[in-house]
Amino acid sequence: MGLLIYGVSAKSASRTLDELVAHHGHPKAPAATHTLPVLGGASATSLSSLRGKVVVLNFWASWCEPCQVEAPLLERAQSTLARHDGTVLGVTYLDASPDSLRFVRRYHLTYPNLRDADGSFAHAYGTDQLPESFLLDRQGNVRALSRGEIDQAFLDRALALAQTS
Amino acid sequence: MHVATAERSHGRRRAAALLFLLIGLAGCQLAGAGAVDAASRPTLPAIERQVMCVSCKIPLNVAQSQQADRERAFIQGLIDEGRSESQIKRALVGQYGPAVLGLPATHGFDLAAYLVPLAVVLALLAMLAMLLPRWRRHSPPDGGRSDASPALDPSDAARLDADLARFK
Image (tube, rainbow over all chains, first blue to last red; front, side, top):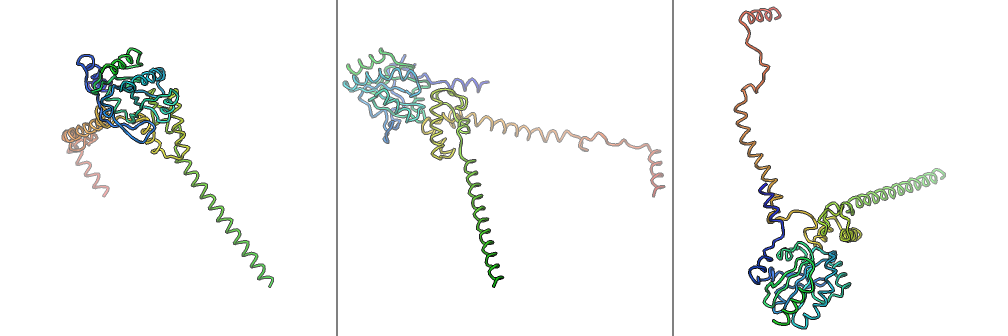
């Protein structure tokens, strides 16, 4: 029985990051040096390569319906963020590359996208459902997060951060 | 002269028959090999039973969703390319991550899925090792047989001896 209780608590997604963001300011973005392959490319990169930029880190998959809804919003935000040294960074999770690439073409996404093939990067953020988004400042700290579909308020906060920092 | 021609024609017929036999045997062999190949080739239902629908988190063979259909199409594509079962599984893990296999991880709490059964077996063996000698110590020396004959009365024993002596 004890094992069962421990198992249920251990298997549920970690919400440590949520608590840190809510009560303890701006924690460092987890797994920032974790290298991920570029979607549709042969190279790989990590979140730390974007240090100095405001980043909207967005976990998505082509089969996720809310991801389809927020993709045009993210693309619109990207055009503004790019002007203020910021970017959206998409990370696909539990998705096959051909499907992800079709999604990128369908929604004309211009921001970079990486593949989290083994899910370890997503797990570091406590991500178990899609979509989820994290706002990172120029120092690589998590300033806000959204578990579920983002709204305009979240993106406005990202744009404000990019414009003022 | 006639005999020689007949013999030559007979020899040619035998050679032709032998050739047909060899061709037939080779054909059977090829057909058999093809049958074995077909049998060992992975099938979509066989793979579906072993993998998960990553978005619905249920086995793919019972999943009904757009994503499940995409996974099936991906698997079918690999089958059509002639990939083996293990190659297909590797490709699935490469695309969808290890979660697609639905197996417990070999780290963290998931390790318990492998360790607990092992611990149970070891505990049972230890229990047997402890209880078996005790059980053997407590069992009667004759192996617990309850059909042992009672001791004979001296008069009955004498009568039995006399009877046996008579039959000698």
